[in-house]
Image (cartoon, rainbow, N blue to C red; front, side, top):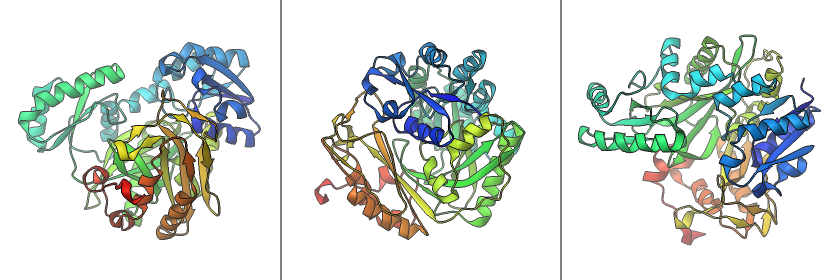
Length: 450
């Protein structure tokens, strides 16, 4: 087992990794930008190294500075968290060259599964159902038109190296293709340095259901059930829950086995998520794979009573996965608490938090790096906390989340807590009849009711 791990990330996920490391008796090194000097992950790590100014490009994405921090602190491994360099194949490769264990997949595996068009090709070879579309990168709008004519409109253009909704455009008819292709390609090149595009059939009103998997270096893979991530705005997840309200025993077995088959067929090592779209007839299609731990991993932890970060670290240290039957108990919901104003089109709200009172009570968990007096920087993602509750069933979990949201008091900045409160009372959320476009097309936030 490792003696010391450097966490190449910030905020709540850095603090989350530090907590597990402490429980495992592993020393930790935090890295931070000057904007994060007072963040809790810096305070609670055994050592901390400043790696640059607020800009991510000059700090959390600066590989030489992170490697230098690992060298001067004698760290043996690097945990990348999520975002930033977590799915960067070059970073994984360079860590290996410097005798540092990257707690995640190899660079070859990230290349194979991190690029969406290549991942789709690998899933087809593994026999996993995929959404009809291009089998690889598109040569241009003419090829896109030809494929769309074969599979039928609407279709969706996606950046091969993309994520977070960037480089994505829905095309409803052929006359829109050239314009949308140019727009998506330019956005992909600007955002990811890679203009490659692929195309898929656009499924109307599906659920977004993902399977959490873990693979070890001994050729084993397991899954931990599913999460429903259908409630999204602009392709950004707002709320996640486990299990999915649309799930059946048969569907879980089929999706879980497909995910495990996919992981074992490519010799996957580490934590990962196989993401699927599920239509109204319970047909499921591979969408993409995330080769890292996910923001929403706590809901899986709560219903399986598993520390996924600990398993990541153990697998990276060469230990085999424990052979035990999947047991899911109860229901868990996670609300992402963001520093943004839902009454003003979710405008980011940076600044100093004057009051920060977190909820408590039975089966309530808050993952956060914020506190009263903490200044939310404007340079990074707006998420400042994750509120997770669990209960014996979904209706009790909703009731517990309502209570917990009512106790969560943050002043000095605006947050989306009022938005979540209204969502908890929405009839379609309560009965599970929502889909990936529900928040944008059907749910209306009314600030006057708060």
